[in-house]
Length: 125
Image 1 (cartoon, rainbow, N blue to C red):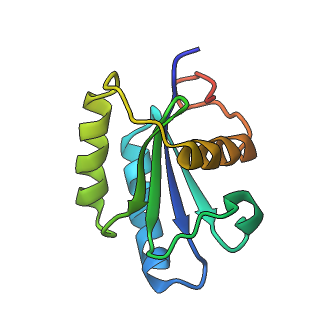
Image 2: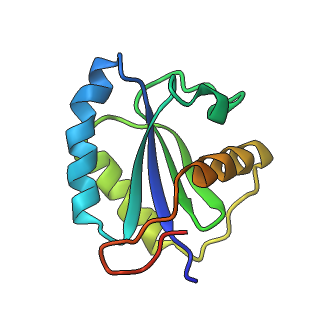
Image 3: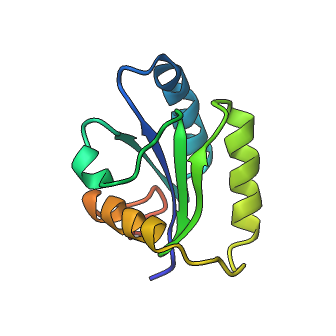
């Protein structure tokens, strides 16, 4: 099974910036049907996040297969995530430094979302 790209937005329902960013995030997801986009409310999923503390919203996690490629706050503008995602997709084979805490967080997040069929019929990991 090929490695799947994921973009997970860590936000909060009470956050006005997050509410404004969600349609932008969803529009970007529609432009990248081969990438799995998920929205995760940090308060609803506090147990899942463990010790990770998203201090600035939106915080994005971008992962490819089992490797976290980016984890941090991002300006809530479509162009910023679009450029970063295009850059990361172009570097899919580049080696990544291992960070045990990020890897553990990613494994918990990935396991919390059920596998689903992507628009092209593949099953997301």
